[in-house]
Image (cartoon, rainbow, N blue to C red; front, top):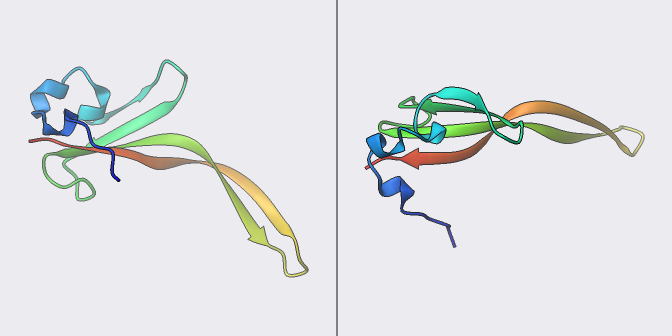
Length: 84
């Protein structure tokens, strides 16, 4: 079941105080770094996508067995807002 709110049914102007509703970058109160892009080929017209800079972990198998682990900070998709 998909979680849905009424927020995506709002007009763009109603999102003017919310950084998820316009292009830009910011740091949240918790120190998390965010960026939002709007009206791009990735979002489509009249929409915004937000990404959070997050630590991503990966595991590569070794030819002799076991794994090598790594971590890297990457921008990870978090949400999309589609305006009416």
